[in-house]
Image 1 (spheres, rainbow, N blue to C red):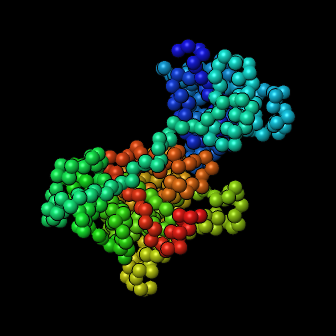
Image 2: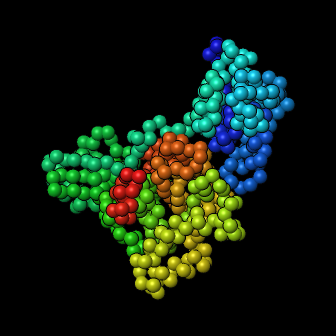
Image 3: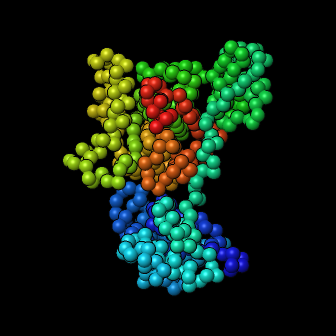
Amino acid sequence: MNQLQKKTFILDTNVILHDSSCITHFQEHDIVIPITVLEELDQFKKGNQMLNYHAREFARLLDSLSANKLFNGGVEIGANKGRVSIKLEFPLHPDLQNHFPAASKPDHQILNIGYHLSKEHPERKYILVTKDINLRMKAKAVGLMAEDYTTDHVKDVNHLYSGRRIVDLNGQGSELIERLYRSQEEGVSVDQFALEPQPTANEYMIIRNGRQSALAYYDGHDRSVHTVQKNTVYGITPRNAEQCFAVHALNRMDVPLASLTGKAGTGKTLLALAAALEQRNLYRQIMLARPIVPLSNKDIGYLPGDIQSKLNPYMQPLYDNLSVIRNQFPENSDMNNRLDRMLEEKKLIIEPLAYIRGRSLVKIFMIVDEAQNLTPHEVKTIITRAGENAKIVFTGDIYQIDHPYLDSQSNGLSYLIEKMQGQSLYAHVNLEKGERSELSMLASELL
């Protein structure tokens, strides 16, 4: 490759904490790690969070590349890859002194290193890669190219797989719908429907023919379409077609991975919890987990009380869903007494996601709530821990993200849907209709 075409990417700390293997994804281009980034990573090495894992893994990766050469021209990352090097700090460049007087600020140190390199080697193209929007704007303001880390971005979130389609037979399918209801076990060959494009495995359908209609799904194994029944799970009855599809996906033992998306009030977590409780005898434990992502710039340490008191506000939405299920039955009913026993015996646990990492997910029904606040790597880590007879369900709203460095394109839930669609072990349903209240839906749409 011509030297003029070759790029050098300067990585910010948040890129590495997002994906510790990031340096392997820049093809033949070179990479610079500012010494400031290593200093920041050092603060994240201890702990059990995914950020701590990425900090440690990246340090091991650099060390394996022969650390003593990283400060002397760099070292090759691998075959057909570029070189990675570590750059020490420079005195604040005169061009930046009036604009960024806080030279000790890590962001400004990283920006200064990138700016120095771009001025010393104008023949090369230097690009700062950061997930911090403000830092990207600062870099562009001083003439340094900057971009987001997009390796694991979803291409077009507006056309993300919804898990269902509407099939209109235009008044010509009365016999087909009748056959569907008569042949619930064997189904009807997908070829009879002349669908375009062809459905993917476990895709759901609302089939219409004038006043006739049927809810169905496509079985990729035998290439047939089967009806979907409206089933009540632990006192919760689906109220619309998408909720029927969701319950069906949650109840299928042959589909160990499922995801439910939708706005607040569409019933994602409630249906997942109710379905898990309905199948309690098939699993040795039900786990409900969610990532801890503060809604403000203050982290969990600012909250009063012991660790449990600090965590309770984050776990409360899960307990709220459990209360909705409880309210379907009389106070001292067998169903509610069973819930109490499950909680006491830890057959049903509600915990932060960080507490669940490292456990063996064998014969476990695991619900990961607010999964849009996970990175693609975190989602992958959770799924790869699945053992025999486990089921993992991710729920969330890809447009309501609290994580400072994730958006609708880069979060783990969107990534999961795009990469897993069409796999026979996976089902997805996007819930569109809110069932919480008319006011709740109005707020979701207008505010």
